[in-house]
Length: 391
Image 1 (spheres, rainbow, N blue to C red):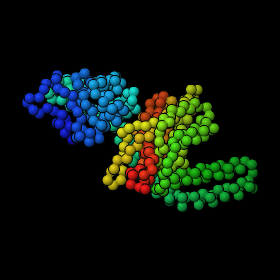
Image 2 (image 1 turned 90 degrees about the vertical axis):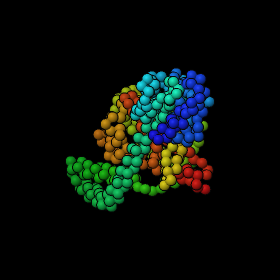
Image 3 (image 1 turned 60 degrees about the horizontal axis):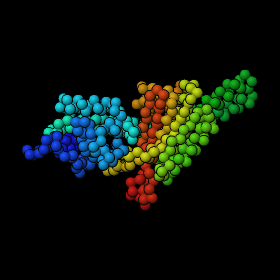
Image 4 (image 1 turned 60 degrees about the vertical axis):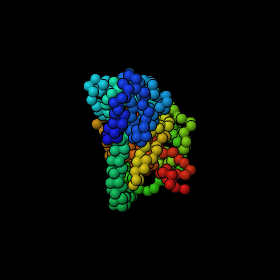
């Protein structure tokens, strides 16, 4: 947090003749503060906003003109632990740091952050707050781990495809020949052999999908993709579940591959429907949401250029939630909450989202689980990953 210390030094008064804290003029954000990618706020003794940088405006979803002079409780839920931390920083006169804090508010999607609060010398009751979004970092770590594991699966799939699929075809053919001359009691066994061979072949084919083929992204209307997924779900596994669509109709097209995005969202909706079915509740509901969320960026390429991911797509259900012991490993291959699950579905989801240059985040507790995809926007001048260098 060297940037935070430098920002704090710049904010501290250094001249002997400066005004006291009671009559000090509100400070304006400097170019230094605006250049810092993490949100930074200065608050007075009553938790009124004195100054914010650009990243804080994006985080809170409110412009500096509307933030300055307002209480932080107007934009964040007043019962959040952050307010206790602010009082500790004031009363103890030291920097307070905490991780895994929840921020929530009317314009702010629920997220987990790391936070530092430090008192300002010479300004009684004033504190500087630096925030680092921990949910995106955790989601990215999970996604990177899942992608590395996917590469290993790709190697295994290549071996399995060559060494296993051909013998499987021979086994299935032999079972069918036996079935033609078998007694009725024995035909049940030959049918079992064919079914198990088909199951293994399907598993190998699913593993083959972890290959590194380019996705050739184009402009995709994400609402048409969601509508297609909803129709498929309601005509089959989600027939008894209520679907709620909460869309932002003003969203631009995203940069992606339509069929792969259908595969991702259909997988998430199917998982949600199966989770609800486990509870046997009659008010099962799946919400499909879209919106525009500022400030979500990922570094990409050798120069770590930042790519904006402003469009989000979410699948939310009111099922039992994901067990805490597997949440951190949710996107790893062969991890599943289902007794008969292969554990490849969410690993493939994470790989496809990563291939789109996007990010997937998860929140879950009993009665609510949400998977949120952050995707790049299509622009006419973009290359395939939207950095503007293409024709």
